[in-house]
Length: 172
Ligand SMILES: CC(C)(COP(=O)(O)OP(=O)(O)OC[C@H]1O[C@@H](n2cnc3c(N)ncnc32)[C@H](O)[C@@H]1OP(=O)(O)O)[C@@H](O)C(=O)NCCC(=O)NCCS
Image 1 (tube, protein in one colour):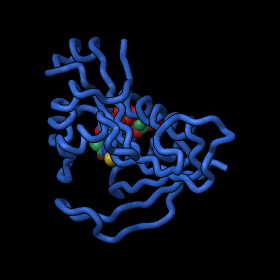
Image 2: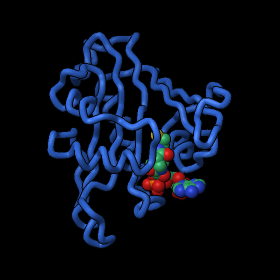
Image 3: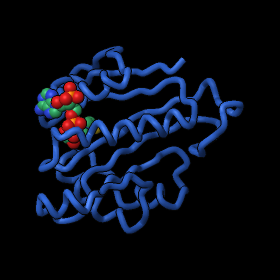
């Protein structure tokens, strides 16, 4: 029905194209290649695909969304056992996007819970993110997953200019 997997080289073109549809500060091919090759030692990209939805909605490909998480830990991005946990480690949610045609169907929630699993399997005590203050669906998902508002950055985003809401989740 669907799959959520780590990015491979064959996913890169589709992710770049979907990223451009939605964001201004786009990821580059080089950055994504660095993640696939593990030259980048901090970032994980999850690829969400569904052949069924792609057929049903006549989409250009089976890619329905993607998410990017940054892990900063002395253990790197590898999964670890609890005895190896780094109490000073942290994670940051860098991206989550669901294809426009498929929003508001619960898919963002599903993808985000997999992003949380990435953090849980690495015993990350603090997770940070920032989001446009008007982004109600994203903020809803974050709150449902235990994130709380910790601050605001005035006029942080451009085109259109808008404040960023800073949110944190503490796993103690
Ligand atoms: C943010 C995003 C990933 C959410 O994905 P989604 O699949 O549309 O979200 P879901 O369908 O899982 O909905 C999540 C919750 O938000 C609610 N919601 C969805 N659209 C909404 C809207 N326009 N206004 C208010 N709430 C909304 C849903 O009802 C659901 O809440 P519920 O559990 O109480 O029903 C998607 O909107 C998106 O790709 N946006 C563009 C990229 C972006 O802004 N990313 C976040 C910053 S990186």
